[in-house]
Length: 153
Length: 222
Image: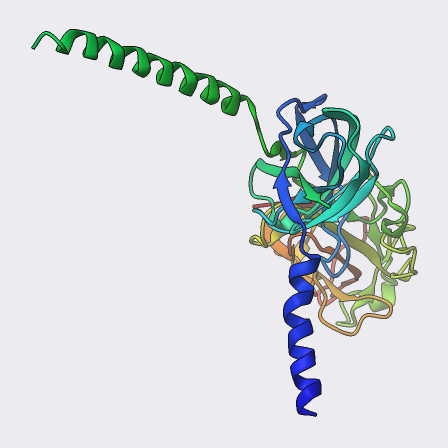
């Protein structure tokens, strides 16, 4: 039993270090919004009896251009990261034109959008986002920030 | 002393190189960005809907219905038999409204012609706010063609709803005679509905005739 205990401890220390990839934010300075602002509308024009259905939704199209020069001719995993931020929980889903993967993410999480060798210094795609947020959290116009990051293999 | 000027010049060159190199780095760094920000704005964040009697919806709430305008003015009425006039037995009134179903889910919530549907909502962004208020603007009396009058305070209403067990958002009441009275409230972002059954108190003798009057209901949001 004592031996087993020490073995388990050793594994628990070594395993996370071996699995951890280096994560680096990616320069997205070439990214541009095709529509400058996102207009949110009630998903349901009318509320429910219980007051539970208060989602507001809005969409926008963004021409994403990220600089992956530092990882050229290497393999990497690119994530879209939507940090937790004010005014509260936000969901984002998106479609792409094929260069990046479509997906969805809740604030405070990230989603894989690319996992192949990096063949060109810049990666471009047009993403159409739909954002969902609880209307009872919205008190004014608010910014929503996301970024792309690379997990190096 | 003589060695100083060349020394100074040499420093100056190095200094220039360092400044220039630093400027290049700064220019490159200032163009990089590591996050993208979009701005989200709520459009038409406020909406109110009040229906007394018939109303208009494109579909039920459960099927994504949208509210519409309906200018119909419904009536409630009763004909009191001559033998019963003023005997103190309240006379139930009936309505020409056909609104029995709730636009929330198409459930038969009210029983027509004995009840008038009243319902609606108050949509708003932000946290819970003060409730929206529903008021009735009531004339002093119902009048007949010959100028006889019956005070509006002779009409009252009970409240209920098929399948409801709790309190009603639009409680029972009696009209004031002339004035504006509160007849219910709506919490923000909730659907509210009740069914009103009107009755004429019939506790005084009146001249024969047809007595009419119109009450206007209004919804005011904070």
